[in-house]
Length: 381
Image (tube, rainbow, N blue to C red):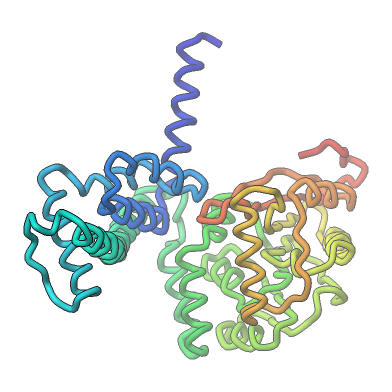
């Protein structure tokens, strides 16, 4: 490859890495919030390194964050510092303070530094919250405008389908209603599945939880019939409220329930709640229940010694600890283990998608049951 093409390819990859991924409201919001928080800290000369150190592991937008961090322009920085000192004085002394040169010696300097430090954190938190919310809203509007222009992506009105799905949960308990609204808004899996353009047909949602994924696909017209089950009775009760008899949801233990025959089977954020042996057994039963040509869609944590994976695993354990999800000793497997297990059970792995989002190591695997079982090669995928 010519040197100039190599340089361009490296530059594109570097630019994409700095941007963190495609424009998403959560990414824009967090990036601007981080940049504003860093930008008002009295750490001049370190703003860019801090943006790089924090944004790159979290897949945030370094360029957007650093642009926001430049709030501390030379003409604005003195105003920011004075505001921070006054905020710090209100916290420490309960009053605003008049700053004199006499304070710049002895113990007064220490007190002034404490006021500045506390004020910087407070001002950063305020600006980060306001700026992040505004940036997320602007990105949301931009994304909607982009989707309206792209007839390939949104032929059935994606935003309207998501709204109809949310309205199904209006009579659900408040905490479930808010959870579903946030999942529909920030979880990219619905958009990723829609972009696959695969025929879903009859769908089985294994470990469906509150049912928002299947119902969103149903509202989008991508599903012919949908069956879902989960071992959490409370979540299934919420799913049934939302289903309105359009979908069959039931309380079942995924470790033993017979898997109905289907064109598409979803196993989303489920496997790590099971032991390795049970994970393998479930994948075997699911593979046997797929119709020839059918698709299995699996999403789970890619268990690696990376920051994103460890952070995701920690949050999953917190969810179990605070009874947000049922589970015992969580068992996380790598994407390679998942791929090998799928091939071992007769499926052909057609692709893996690293999920966009704050947690880096959620991975989506796609596998197909071949029309000819003997056509599966151990090296497929």
